[in-house]
Image (cartoon, rainbow over all chains, first blue to last red; front, top):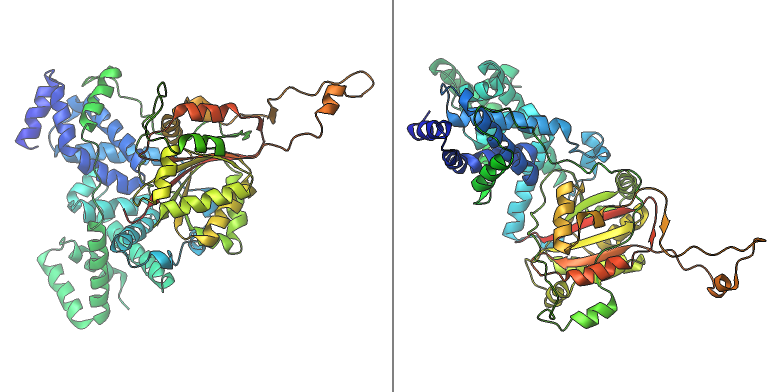
Length: 190
Length: 342
């Protein structure tokens, strides 16, 4: 645990609860960004992050300090997000199979709006986020943690509660699956 | 053909997670195999694309909000664990006896309000909440694809599964798309109210303005026909999700009405006008005969707002007071039309 985090945690446990607010400020965007990419929905992500911080606040006395505070917090947020995902209907029944869904994706996002740079950026983001959304939760999580958060395999294993070898094989399969999804999108786009 | 083991090594190589011996093995593989080089290049591109996704941020007062909620719930370190209360879909999803309406603008109110730059005395202006851009969860489709065989009936069927929907439409010219949506709504007999501030923005064709359209009492086939007509003349993509409780709360706030006023009624259709009086012998009284043929069934209602404009809640309430017949099996839709170039 960093010295600053340790000080804030100690102060909070001693009764100065505002110190926890400083921890929230410090990590809120990082956690939110990850959860947002996991869930694909900003409002759900904000709810999850809030609940994760509240959970962390109440569980602060159980934080042993043998890992980074962020890692511990991330694990809480990840579990909260997974729990939400289970409860929530995020995919409409209309989706059917993935192949089926692919049939109705826009192939030509509209000729009239083309060469706008912002539009291209938005389209690229949409393409990536959509491909991410089609991955399983396990695969999506490892890609986000590795490529967006730059986490090490060890940290990822700790957060997800699986061996490092599993992280490695999951990343391998996730990358190949993502590649295949993007390739299919590219083919559709001509 | 690369083996699964080779692919896994390439992935770990990309992540910088190999020991010296395995790293040398991968370098040898890359030296002799163009397929391995190509795969590594693609994986690097994908990882780069992921890293390039824009970073999301929370409001600056988020920490204060968390601490406020903690205080409200009486939480403290070491206390019992909080209950996770995720945002959920409304529980009332049953029959959508929906009734009409929304806000909006009749021709009369338009004439009344169109020249108005400042609100009249006694009129409270509700400042709408900013509507976040749609998230990439849900069902995305191109409006133009509604003309393709298969999609339209499937969409119609989907609309029958839930009485309330949130439809985010990305357009490079939201004002134009709103104008086409207006035309399509009117063609389906929907009574339309356009908030004066929205009308002003539409007239000026302001870019980067997000519009909100709320519609009620629409049959699924009417809604798909409306979307089809918009897609026939306009492009853009749409993202469909069931309307959430938060969507409903936000919408009610924008309109300046209670959330309950936007919830579709359950049960059989409700006729709010007095029922016809029947006399013994099965004949209707003269008064009823004088009334002539039964009025045409009430159709949909819709209101158009500019996201950043002020809303006149009095006009909205007036509009709501015109609700008459709730048709069963209808849906309500919360459209958000945003500028994709913003």
